[in-house]
Picture (cartoon, rainbow, N blue to C red):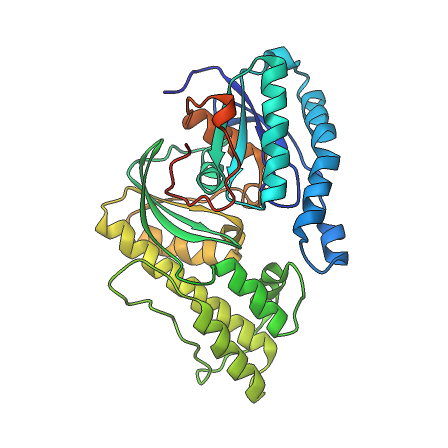
Length: 340
């Protein structure tokens, strides 16, 4: 159960940037601060785990202080602290968890452990104009994960299916590198190229991997191989290949999401994760949801990427009663795993 009129400070350090936020009652954002390391990661050619952990350590206290300053609240006014315990980079997770423990102990506030993947879902609850009806079918799609989950209510999640190899976001990034579009943060750059492409050629048709299988799993590694084969043939422009590649991934994601929503009699469909910012995915799933009578919820763009706002929200709606000593980072935590 959760308490009304509750202010939760959320800490999210699963990767390379330490966002901190304060959210009221799980739905109202009060303050949010992020120390971005994007420029630094571009210089290093990607995220270096050891470097990411050191950057987290460097910025975590100033970001917490800045968040409290922005909110005009004192430590004593915070009711609880929520922190990501996994999945993520172990060094970065340790920084967040230990910082949250220290703050919890010093301020005598309860600490709530949050699964980062479940957190993604709660980007749909913060400052939303319409309520989510349960059961809801959730597609969590990011750089490291592609999962379908049946959400029967807060704290009640059933795993439906997920990727067998590469996640959708990872496939976007690797394909962008393969096509020479961008060496880093390539997924967004590829989508931009795809959206601006005015070409069309019915001859170019990439596979839609296991789209019609009798389960709700995904597989995208073979799609990368198909793109490489087409690119090496040099019969089509990289812009056109990017456009067809995006269409292939979006078609598979939307088809399986709608199919699962029908099977489990969902009332709502929710998106979450970094790839939920993809313009084409949002466009197609909106069309298909409306056509099939599902209420669609998509998080605002700022809550698609890693955010402490949805960690605080998830903490409010999914409060656990763990002892401080029992809250430990778990880099391999799955979306359906219980936090123990």
